[in-house]
Structure formats: C-alpha cells, structure tokens
Image (cartoon, rainbow, N blue to C red; front, side, top):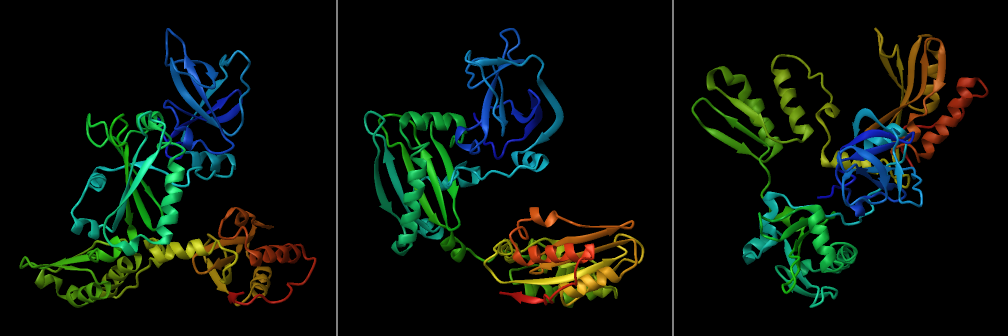
Length: 448
C-alpha cells in the first residue's frame, strides 16, 4: 500500500549533501507536491533492505522512497550509486515540519477533492438505506458508474434519494467537479481503479473485494464505493448534504450533573448547565453534587471554572484563550488573514518583559505605543500589536541595551499581507533609528 505524502512521518536525511525525506513505503503519486521530486531506493540482492542506488522507479528490492524539493541527477544508466552519500540525521518530520525546519513554503495538496479510506463507523454510508435514514443523513442521491465491457468506457446514472431541494445548482456544479477530478485517478478506467485500491487500502471488509473512500468539502460529503471487478457496476458515489445533517441532529450534551441520591441529569444548553452548577455547588457537602463538562467549547469550560474559583473567593487566573478556540474563534482567525476585510488593532508595550515587575501598558494608537516604548528606561521591553483580539506579534524588541525590529510578523499569515502592520514597521524603523517623528496617529478600532 502507498502512503499520502501529506500524512506520512518521514526520516530526515541528506542525499548527496541535500536535505530530503525518506519513507520505507511507496508514496501515492497523486500526493507528490507540485514542484517536488520523488525517487526510489534499490537494495542489493543479498540485502534488499540496504539501499545501494537511487532510481526513478524501483519494482524489485525496493528499499525506500525519497521525497525532496531539489532534483537528483540520475545518469543515463537509470541509476546512481549512493556510495555512502545517504546520511540519516536522527529526526523524523512530517512534510509540514520539514518545510518549517528548512524555511520552505508548505505546498498545497494538489488534489482538490482528496479521498481518504473510510473509517469503520462510516461503512454503513456506502450501502442502501431506508428513506428515513437517507433523510436523517441528508442523502441527496448516488451516481452509479461502470467502465463498460473493455474497462475503458465510462457510463453513469444518477439516482435521486431524499429531498429534491438538496439537488441544487450549487450541489450539481460541485458534484461535476468531484467526478471530473476523480476521473483523473480512481475513476479513470478499470485498471486505474484496481491500482488505486491496491495502493490506497480502504477495503470494506476482509476479502470483500470492495473499497470505500470519502471526500469532504465545506458543505458536502462524498462516499465512493469501488468494485474493481469486470462485469459488475464498478462504483457508487453517494452524496450527502452536511448542512442538512447538522439541522436534523439533536443538540449535543455539553454537561452532566449527578447527586448522591443517584439522580443524573444531562444538559444541552450552556446557560442552564452553568446556572445549575452555580446554584448547586455550594451544597455539594450535603447533596453529593458532582458535575462533568463534556464540551470543548472554551466559554463553557471557563465558565464552570470561574464558578468554582468564585466559590472560594478567588478569581480564575486562566484567560479564555487558554481554553482553546470555538468554531467562531477559528473563523475569526481565518478572517484575520484576509486583507480585504476591516480589522481592529490594539497597540501595547510590555515593560520588564519576562522579568520581575513585568507591566503591560495599553495605548490608544501606534504613536502612543512608540512614545511609551521610547520613554521606558528598562533593559527588557516589547512593542506589540493585537489584531482582531485573536492574534498578537512583537514589532520591536529591546534587550540588554540593544533594540531591533522583530520580523516574525512577515511569516505570520494573519499579518504578512497587512498594510497597517507594514506601515507600522516602516514607522518603527524611523522611530527606533531616531530619523523621524512618530508620525500621524493610528487609532484603535476598525480600519477600513
């Protein structure tokens, strides 16, 4: 079976003095990043696992696969002897970690609609279901496909299932794109399907000869069942509307409470759950009251902790960000990357950074932050900005008598294309060097 380059854990190596990644598995060709290179290692006949040459493709005595962003010169003979030029550096990296270590841009997955083998819990989605179950899961319908008598044709039929309103122009356009994408690989022809299933796993059950894969987009889930046998229908692509699933699902239980009497109650409403904790917690010694938070929602988790600290006359020292992000928080972080949206900025200076007496000074503008930064006589200070209340970076650092600008914001996706921060950096270069005044005020709030 082949592995997905984006999911694999590689050994960090040097090949002929160039950094690269090594896996003992073969790599799925459709996951090799654009502009990257993939080579095979061949082992000797006496020791097939000991690499002796690097080649474009090795069928026998395959000893590993190399992934690298730099090409390797292969002579006309078709192979290049290693001659001790394969060095293991003692680290394991994912593709993303390798890019971070080497300062490379992390490549986008070349597959627009990436398939993954189905999990055990998803197996039921690949077979016929009752109309009620179809409605519950937001099933739109399925495409039945086969490759004809020679295995090179492509015949398909659409079978609607469930609410016809789900079969919208939006869905039809995306389904067309999904099928066209899969026609390049697993649905190209019968031979390609057989090879794909062999390389990617996903067998529905032992010796079934049928394979299951899932592709998900923002609003839809596509479940592909493959039957790479001549004479039968070769594939069924069942389509589900994820939004309809969410609407029909019961709200999740976010917390439970129990009492010494054995009574147990479950709650789906955060406000009611927190109010029960607030009302019952003081009587815990006599009632045996216990509560359990079952949600990852940081506002609920922090709210429960706030009540517990308050009971003992203390303030919860953990800020909300220590509890993780809600879906809304993740969307806010994503929006912070968009230079076309309005954003808010909070400028502040930290005095005695990471030292005794550390103090934060909030200001109403970049001008105020520059003046405060320049006016502090301490040996350790930082000038910072928080964007949309979700992302913060240093812009200027003073340490042990030396002051410099921090360029880390240029690699941060939420700041790299931000014109306000770019202008702030330019002003700070003048202000720190003493070549100009702090300039016009940049006020807090929304910048158009």
